[in-house]
Image 1 (cartoon, rainbow, N blue to C red):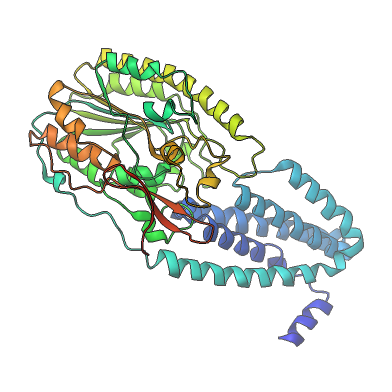
Image 2 (tube, one colour; image 1 turned 180 degrees about the vertical axis):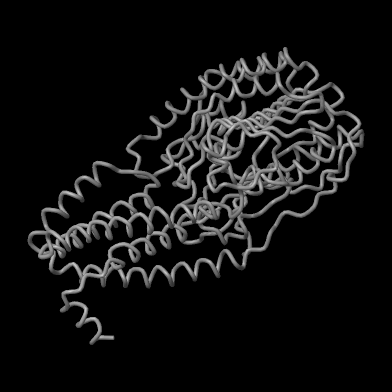
Length: 488
């Protein structure tokens, strides 16, 4: 091995694959090890192979052919420059999931300038990249064996999936991201002055549960519980990043959508952004307002669809059968994700409150329009989690357990408002958390008695740092605040 390396370093040969294929392989392995749940579709893999390997290979072969003919003495400079620029581009796409033009222009300028002085040593850099790639192979294999191949699907069939509905009103599930409940909105952390919004919903005959909680504090973890009516417990803490397969579960043939479909409902998903579609899941919906051409192999979630227009248009064109509409809105959201944010806790609260004010106007307009056009509909306004106000960033919430009740409420107490006939009241009273929403709704529609309260209505968070990382219970099934670590 040593002799072969020395022979390579001393030779005048320039191997095109060393500056194209090897950096591409490293980047793909890095991307899949660190962002697997965002990119685990065959479509995306094909895109990455094309972007990170085929395009760089084509580029170096073309440029090398020119240099061989016209500038043979400068091929070392070409390979030095190409290796650095190519690696910078694909690592930018892997790390930031997008282009960073200023940084890339700076790196490109430095690569060209230094090629006149140290390009003859570019093969040392190639060997370093090879060693990095070997380590990346090991890391990916360990990750895949430890967390992916050993993964066991957790959703199980629910009893309500066999129910036959006696009532089939149109159902609207409106989900404003991170919209807190009235109790939390008025506490010392939020001090929101717009709480009249909840009273307005009440005057529109919405039933409001001020003690409602999500079972988990993120969109994917919470909605996975909502659409399956069961817990995943973060795969018992196996996934350090996003919950594995969450988007496929939320948009696929889960227990809720299967039950609706078996009762003749047409399923419609109206999304503001493509967050739930980043890894190109196979959806179970009959209608989706995001087309395949609006998706990318790079997981960029921002789309800004006019969800109100799309909803109203679909309501107008829907057939006479019962309809289910899932409208996901990524507002008001939550405070900054990254702990590197320069905003203070006060700044984060102010920005969140501004988005709350904006979202209340949009929600009231939507509710009036839906109620006017579809007066017999069941409307569910269900936020997926709280706003994290009180923390300096969402990352801080996962760094160490907290005993502070207001912070726990900031994570889990979210908006639940349901407009339904008066005889739904007992079922509404039985809903404590996300896992109980659809069981109670479906038993109501089937004309069955209020189901016995046997669900685990606890709320959980995954603490990823500190001395005792793991899955913690922050509220027990009775809604009492606790701080209990689950056994692995």
